[in-house]
Length: 144
Image (cartoon, rainbow, N blue to C red; front, top):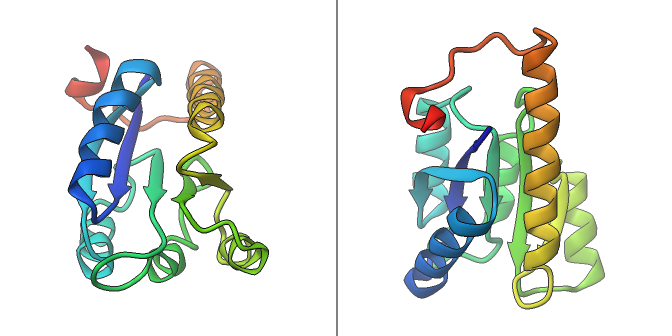
């Protein structure tokens, strides 16, 4: 099972590298990308239940990931949100968790931990689906 993943990252080099690497080593497929807080909120609003994982950068060229975290606080229990950031200050990390982030990962040190998180989340969703706890239709692109 692949995780339908939404990425919020404003830096093109990081975004492209992350998409290429994560699709290669983790069970996920990117279904949407936003480069600003407003674009992320718009995409999330239009695609309410059509994602399993959101990866959010905190400091964007326009807006912040904090606003994105607020936007997804009322998400389904099967949807996970993680922060991928370069800022490891404890108060920032605590604020992310208060806003509902399931995990916070450091861009330079925690990519392997993010991959493991994705594998665990995909396995959990697969188990829930096999037990009939998830009844949504799987998009065609996700079965390939």
